[in-house]
Length: 112
Length: 111
Image 1 (cartoon, rainbow over the protein chains, first blue to last red):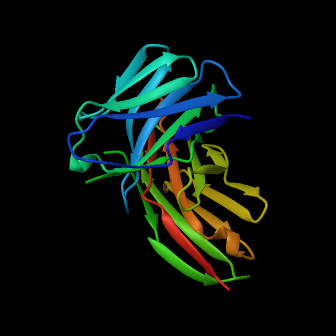
Image 2: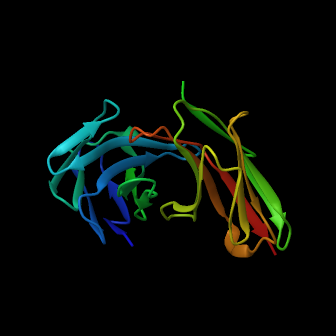
């Protein structure tokens, strides 16, 4: 089965600093990959998804960007963090058909 | 607008008791509906999947129902355990790589 690795687990960054969150996937090949943000008391919000290397779709206009340099690597970045970027960021992977999305354990990002 | 609403927002029950969580959705098109369990500080984990033609599906002490006519689903937990304390998220798949997430029900099982 798939395993999603996310790091770091927690991160505290000052406003205006850059960001790079990494997600790697094991146990599958050519998955669809997703970045979500989960705010307290809110549902998961899809930020980006990717169906292949170098292919990124953005769901909402924002201060963040994503890249997929390798089949099983998905990176979430920002050049300058805003206070509103605080949240719990989840990476997910999905194979074909009715397979569920498998989630990593997330990164809790706090912006000071 | 595609929406998934869950109730109650939070729930406290005694260990060993049963409970039922509700999910109402206004999502179109509909491909399937999943219930996820999310432990605090962890990613969600899929419990069950319901397709349009399925009414009931069980996974151990978890039983999900789906009424596609009224666009309602429920998750029943039998003989609750302390480890059932978590958030339960209802997710509807439109079939176009798009999932619509509910805000979840936070369940606390008390000893």
